[in-house]
Length: 418
Image 1: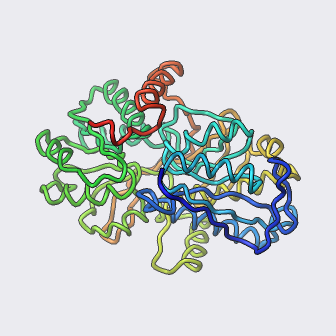
Image 2: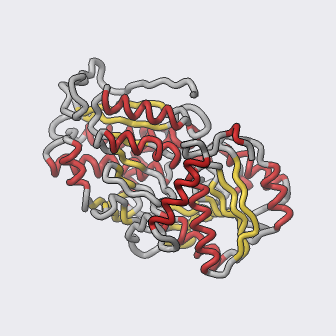
Image 3: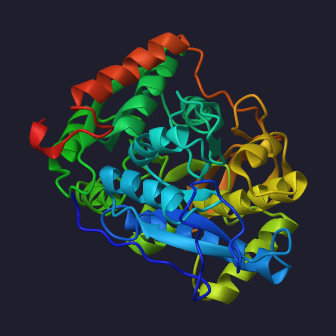
């Protein structure tokens, strides 16, 4: 297990009741958990999400807090390690007595903490697009379900870029499941998958993947790599002469902060699919961007997971006010049906699934590492967590095979070999 540390931000002298795991108003505020990777390969993507979460908390506190109390953030480091996420989630609930937790990026971390939240009947807000195949009364999904990112991305690519695909991803549950969905869809639409390869999270060894792409010459690369492996992947693509003009890449986990961190102007012309881009024209988005830059720096950028984390705090606060309580069971009921004019546009928490109604957008990378929105839906889509290509039972069998095949983990162990 990676070495990890937990740290707290907020008022000094925070009093947390040790007698019960039921959240309550602390003497000087309402403690809430923030659980993301601040170290390791996923810190590349997750640190900005923490900042956006803290911004929302600060804004709500400046407006008077919730139920007359300030929100006190308790920040813990998942360290890009799933076991660490589980232990930190347990501590947030049982030791810090938080009212809610905002956190996780990878599906491996979310699936590892899911039993913790269900065991304690607690509440997690998850801000990242994902593979679906899941629904829990203890999780509010403010990122995209498959029909709000993966599926429309494939259809748009088939219509606009080509019919022959190469799939590359990190080796854990999200890319594996996303690519299973993609295979089902491409087959049904009579496209062709030329190859499919996976790279361990955090690995910089991308040569075999690049060699195969060069050999196969697909029309489109669909990229579900997460974390800083993307830096090596795109550098190697360009070194091999693969440009967007020759073979465009459509990414599912690269947004504005990743582009800024990679600093690769050669990415111009490739694509990403999200529900939100910084370039969205909407008054609520202009305010979000301005407040974020004022707090963290004029050169900073915002992204879809950051926006989904930001609005998650506001949705939770709305539910608490409606419930007139921070009690988790009461707040969970009040979450259903919450509506917000978010930076991305109007969103709505689906009562049946605890997922979010969202618009879909395709962005083309510009030379300033922002996105031109080249396609978008005209309205929010209802979330469908389980794609209809297979039954719910068949999807669960698919997940079970991954989990048990990886030794009861949600990512392929590095030592297990290719």
